[in-house]
Amino acid sequence: MEPINNSVSAPTLESDAVFEFIIEQVKADPNKAKSIGGVFLYKITKNGKEVKQWTMDLKNAKVYEGKPEGKPSTTLTVSDEDFMLLAQGKLQPQAAFMKGKLKVTGNIMLAQKLAPLLKANAKL
Image (cartoon, rainbow, N blue to C red):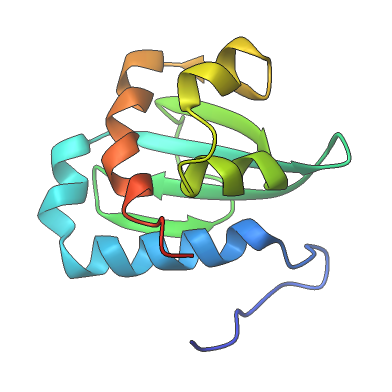
């Protein structure tokens, strides 16, 4: 795996590897990503502070670090640690949401379509 190119301001997070994997998944099958549709903004936190943002623009099959160009359909705020548990299938999204570990604003129903894209990452 190639090293991740980080900006000076953002620390390297465990979740970066998951997003790199998702980028590869989307490149390999852009139509699957487009079938989900929507623009998702992930706000990743560490020690209660937001440290990084990732955009999953599934309308255009693009995933990248940073904010979306327009308004996201859904914004998800989750800690780096909890995001890893979600990606590994050790934490269910509904349980994380109910416990306040996953905050979702915008189109919550659209966020439920993300599960298949994230679940494929259980190998990490």
